[in-house]
Length: 364
Ligand code: PMV
Image (cartoon, rainbow, N blue to C red; front, side, top):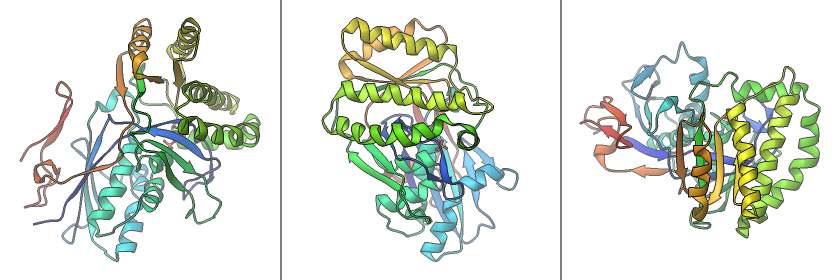
């Protein structure tokens, strides 16, 4: 029997955004960020370390990725080296990962994928790591992944140290803290993004003067305010900061040279409609936020989800809407039939995502 560890993790959507690194290689951010981990859009990852493997192997959505020809994927998997060193093993790993949502839908899967990998790979190597250590591992592949190793509301503290040992996430409140909270995500463009967030943020730091103002004057104020809003379940303040934060981020992107525009006309139409909805309601019932793409993420409370959905129906470009709740963070699947790798043979099992049933199917 081979030792296989399988974990499912989910993405997070930031309400105080991370944009800019002080260390490119260790992925150390210039500012702390805050997000909510969602309960949907799961990535399932199985990991096996095996002495018979000649090199690391990575399968994504049923296809083997050639790591020699894909330096970006290789770079994202660099936590494997750290895990091997810590566990004092030299074996290579077989990693099999599948997204439980359509890959082309425009949902970022790096956070869920790299968080699932950190939890599964460290355990498969025999390590028992706490969430802080897991957050540091996930961070090495993608900054925002450092926040997906925990559920509920999470802060990635930027840290000060050059080795990154104090740059990790902490949980502000678990997924049961604010049960009415919902995230309505609207896919407006299923295309692959033009400029990676990695390249985009580097360009911003190098060229934007507005970015300095964001870093020095805006963020130090909103981080503690957002912590308080979450602790007191103060939706109006939460929503206000979330929208202003997203606007601040996209302003520094526009101030970057050459300018970066991830939002499109449909995104801007949604911004206007959310403000209209709030005005009609007489108070703030919905808050938009946008990442490095045109898709809208709208935070609202359970009783207002239908209103938000009706509002999104007016936007022609909206292709798909997904409603999420606060999620518990990564979960290990221990049923042998859930593994994407056969524990008897160590081979990759046939697996796929059934969109109709919204389910990952694994064949034995
Ligand atoms: O972790 P990355 O490189 O995908 O960067 C994520 C950056 C934003 O999504 C735009 C903001 C954030 O904090 O998630």
